[in-house]
Image 1 (cartoon, rainbow, N blue to C red):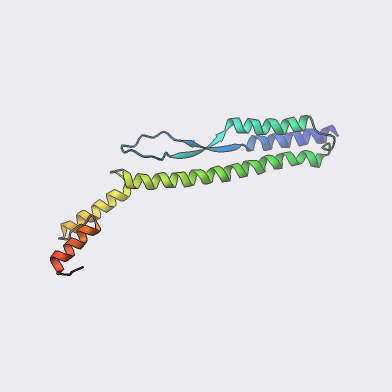
Image 2: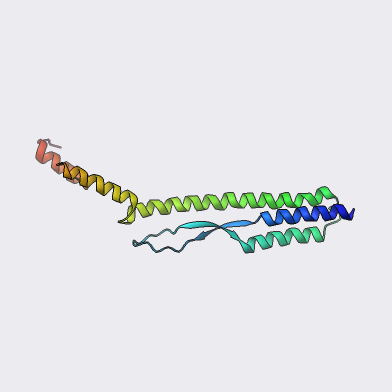
Length: 152
């Protein structure tokens, strides 16, 4: 009986070292433009992991009258794994959405952003071959009125 419990304890400890609670954390970056959003990263939350493992271990060390069977004890690692997977899916989704919003804002606000530099290069090349760049619909409408004699 004690050998089974020892083997089960080793399995539980192995599972415990592989699981944890994940959470999004803010990266402190200082771009040269003012952004409202902040970049996120996925981190392993020590407090959440300790609370999770502490609760499971307390439940294993002081089992209720109905949880003396090995099958019942094996449910603990599965619970740890389920909580860990749920935690990484939810927190990972928050990080992906947050970083997407941050990237979009950075591309629109920062003068040295990738998209802004590509658009600037395109406009410059169009103007180099004799084209005209317009900045607004009103400016385009005015150009049409002056050059094509169209009335709106």
